[in-house]
Image 1 (cartoon, helix red, strand yellow):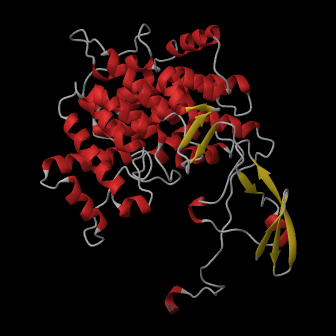
Image 2: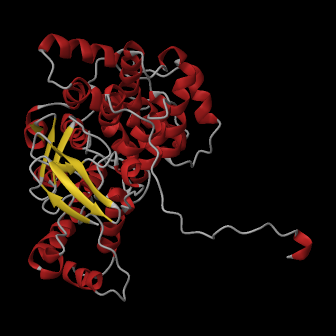
Image 3: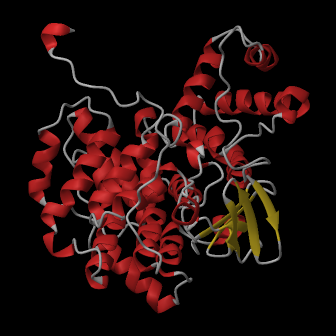
Length: 433
């Protein structure tokens, strides 16, 4: 095959002829070759392991330029949203495509606060699970079960039902996640408190008990809000693609998000920040300096992995990591034990930025490198990190799910394959094998 390009089309030359393929140009000048007619016209398909070069859709939710280190939600730079906005305002932005007016935002916050409780019968589901269950297994189970409790909100093509389901998912996810932690400790579930804002409410449900008053540290609530903003969306990643894929079968929003939680659970996706903290903990307990550790990373014989560096899309600094690094100093000075991890992290980053081995491979810190340290500073247990990631990613998942359902090109996801197995062969009776 051979490709020739004009301003509007790409000419594909293959063994039986030629085919002109449309060239699609995005609003940020991204270019894509539309191969949707390729198989029907030529009998050929493309192979792209991991979908590294394949666009599954056209989306207006998030723009990401990995070469320049740019991330924007609905056109707004992540740096501006992190400095000036709140997670619920970002949630509204992702779900509705624009920032709310003051009146719209007040109404949205009111509705979120009045849908934070979960049905009392849902608590039985927690009790049916082992106390040492991973929080992501619990969260996925509870979110999927919401479809049974809200049967009137499961029609993917009813706008009012979808909006109702979306509101409940954003509102209830902090409660669902906090309860998974409380259940693992054998402590009573704490009801949401409507007078608290979104991040403070979560921290209260996580750490308060009926025995005594618990005051949420405003700085810690602010940091959690920032972390949620930075995780709110990230284009067509594994979990978002999973939510879209499951939703393309006309599965309801609860079922689709439950599948996305399971995808996020993987160590190569949402579990990466936990791996970073475990790496830093090991370094804090060991004798290796950052330089010695990085030398082991470069030596293939050691099988030592550097966590929190590099990214599938970013070939420059992850803009989210820069935002997090700025707040680390203020927060970690108040968190016993976390300062040491931050010092080690800075040491690793300093070595990597000066070492040609890491520079040539474009291995820069990503969002996971500093987010785990901040979760530790908040007192969040390590196995809860991914659950908080899911809490932050909720509006992004929903925004993409909704966008897919109004896309004129909507169809069920069904990748092709190239078969490389045995050719036709005849069945042989078991007695003759």
